[in-house]
Every structure is written in structure tokens, then in C-alpha cells.
Image (cartoon, rainbow, N blue to C red):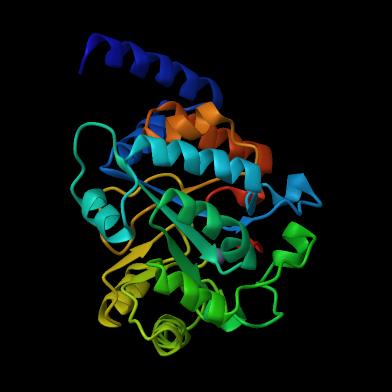
Length: 298
Ligand SMILES: [Zn+2]
């Protein structure tokens, strides 16, 4: 590590401690973010934000998203989800690769994010909750959280993104917490969502993202079911720690509305202060959203 790098690390550590309030939490998060890839997790991209406080974790504005993608395009470090999996399991020195993913299946991904991603030629993945695609259904907790009914993707939109090279991954059928339902139902959520994607897009999917994506939202049993169902990898959305790396619980970093450019850059560079940002945003959002969010559409 260079002298500058060390000084930067100390500075980051101080920043992290100032906001995270614990050295062990900081060490844990820093270790997780040191991996060979940072996988970003978005949900809805829209300017229709009626309640910025409640929507903080679900929505990123179009202009924020555009600025973030311009930065990523310039960085030249954006990789496909398959490459991200490989890199996450074999951490390396130097700046990490970055992958872009979306969860749930909001129409804003097709209408607002897709044109920006295509303009910059960036690969991306969309994890869809198959039971709401092409319907007017809301996800569990969504109405309370966003206070707006966001339209979902149609299967034609999903197919268009797949044809343009997007990876379509599974995110369950009904967005239920797999760790909280009977095993037979969890298996059905896992298998049916993947089968529906293959039927609708003509392409099998290798990737699954756990609904809610917190550390308590999956178990070793659900991991085994995902492996047995033929998926190659599965993802969390905890923005914290997975140690040791395991291809059925690869973590991603949720992106919040109002994240500063510096915070976004630090996150993408996997520098320590990104963990402070994550922690800070958790605190601002309150304990309900910390780690194992309840009743929200993540
Ligand atoms: Zn979700």
C-alpha cells in the first residue's frame, strides 16, 4: 500500500468511525467492500418522487442516475454480471469492477434507465419479481413506502432489454421473504420465477436476487434450493458484508436517492468512507430499514 493510500485509509477510517460508531462494524464492511467488484443495486429510476423521505431507498432521480452512469462510463470499469460474480469470488488488488443491477421490475427501468445505459453502452441486469410483471399489482409494502403506485415493466419491455443484451434475473414470484415461508413455497418462488423468465424471454436465467436481500432474508437451505434449481449465483442487497465469499450470497450496494457524487465515487472505488455512507443512510432511515427491512419493497 502506498503512503498516500495509507493516509487515505486512515482518513476513511476516521470518517467511518465518526458516523458508524464502531470499529468492528467498520472493519467488517471494509473487508466486504475490498472485493474485486462492487455491484450496485437500484430499484426505480424516476423523477416522480412524491415523498423523498419515504422513497429514499427505492428511487433514484433520472438526473442523479444519468450523472452516476456518466461517471461509470468514464471509469471504464463496468463489467457484466457474470464477470462481477467471478471478480467477487476472487478479490484482487486495485480498483474493483462495477456492475449495475435493478430489482423488482419497475417500468422506470425501461423508460428512464435503459436509454441512458444504452447511450453509454453499459451492461446491466434486471431482477424481476415475475408475479407483478405486466400487472398493476404492488409489491408487499410498496404503497406504504413509496406513497405512489409505480407502474411495473411489461414482458415486452423485459424482452426488449434482454434482446439488447441485458441479463434478466429472478427475484421470486410474489416477493415474499424466502426465510419466512415454508420450504416448499420458497422452492416454488425460486423455480417458478426462473421458469417464467425463460418462457417469456426465450432465455434461461442463471441469477437470482433474494427478495429484501438482507442478511436474515436467506438461509443455508434457501441457498441450497437456489443451487439445486440450476442458478449459478444469488445476490443480497445489504451493502455490508459477506465473508467468506460464496456465490449464493454475493452482496450488492443499494443506491439511495440523494447520495452525493463523492459518496457514489467512494462506493465505486470501494474506499472505506463508502461504508460510512451506508451506515449513515441506514441511521437516517431508522431501525426499520437497518439490515433486515420490514414491510418494504426492496
Ligand atoms: Zn425486491
